Amino acid sequence: ANYKTSKSVLAGLDQEMPGIEGSFTLKTMSKFYEDPMERAAYKKAVDIATQRILATIYRMRLDESADTSCDPPRCISERLSDQRSPQHRERAAEAATKSVVLLQNDGILPFNRSVVKKLAVVGMAANAPIVDPFYYAYMGGGSGTVFPGSVVTPLQGITKRAAKEGIEVISAVTFDIPQVLQVALEADVVIVVDAVSSTEGLDRDSEVAPRHLANNLQTLAGAELYRTLHEARRRVVVLLQTPGAVLMPWRRSVNAALNLFLAGEETGTAWANILFGDVSPEGKLPIMFPDTAEDAIKPNPAPSFAYEEGLFTSYRNPLAKAAFPFGHGLSYTRFSFGPAAAVAGEGCSASVACARLSVTNVGDHPGAEVVQAYLEFESAKDTPARILRGFYKTRVLKPGEAEEAFFAFSRRDLSIYVVGPGWTMQDDVKVHFGSSSSDIRQVLQLRQSQTTCSSETCH
Image 1 (cartoon, rainbow, N blue to C red):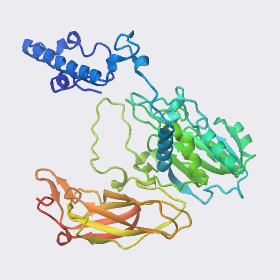
Image 2 (image 1 turned 30 degrees about the vertical axis):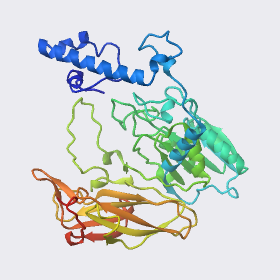
Image 3 (image 1 turned 45 degrees about the vertical axis):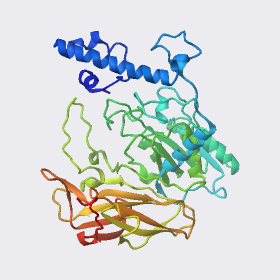
Image 4 (image 1 turned 180 degrees about the horizontal axis):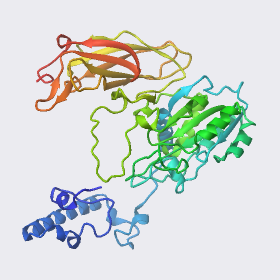
């Protein structure tokens, strides 16, 4: 995406993407350069850009391809090669698993084979192929779309893992309520794989038809399906695959809900790892899930629109009600936070102020916690009550094991922006340590006398 190619190329742009044929030629661009001097400068800039591109081609020996019959730029198939490996897929599965956010859980998860004998996996996204529009279940649309050679669907991942526990899996890859209900009544637990996605150039509008896959705040399934399952006294686990925040008006009708932000080819593996307790969830929401559409910034059809919220968005807006707050994410275990203390000395010499607190796994499962540090600038005006300025993720802690969480705050961290002076360091700052923006466990008062400034950090 380039706003003005005519200016960018003169500033050093080598190649405009996505590379529409003809958009970078002198003939196309000449209308922007009426002055002969400017046109000459443009031609020189293009020559330099061409030299740099060719230098890379020669350095990578792309000109020595075994097949030189293609005529650039029509050489896509000749230049592509599969660079994937089993190690890459393992890393993809690990990243996807660590990204799962457990939103709510009444104790139904992880699955216990002594309780669960048959699972029903339902939903259009449960076994979606990698074809339009279903690839949106694994990745976003637009110029950033990447098509993997294969994908582990939720149904495939869950079925494979359930077999190891001797649990039977039945399915209905639909949101048709009679079909879903027929399958659900045969199972101990119903897993609904619900999804929504987005693409570039459009707001995600809650008014879009609920079953349209992309650019929507509503998920595919719709509240009626969840209400029907609840009335049928089915235990329900919802797996959400989303590009961002969604509305969950049905959340009180289900036993558990989890979210995964479009995780690609190992999506099904990640779900299975979490559902069966191979890994305890450790993901946290990097956004707020609003309670209603009124708690989200409204989409606007106008080509140009001024957003005037400033910093007062998400958890920083006291008027916005959250279904699940910023930073939220449950675990299969529990963590306690010890008292926080300001520290100096080793490890803090390059920072303005440092703090630490102990995190202990006081539950029954191994797990990792993300401690979040929200700063309150007590004397500042027109500033949110709390602003995230740091976080610390522990290693996977065994039950009873503890780890010291360490926070190093820079001058910028302890400052707010003031029109005119710029970034201005604050004297009195409170640090709120929590498991989420609304789950604060410890508070530490930092005063100017407690900082450990060096000449490099406090100038």
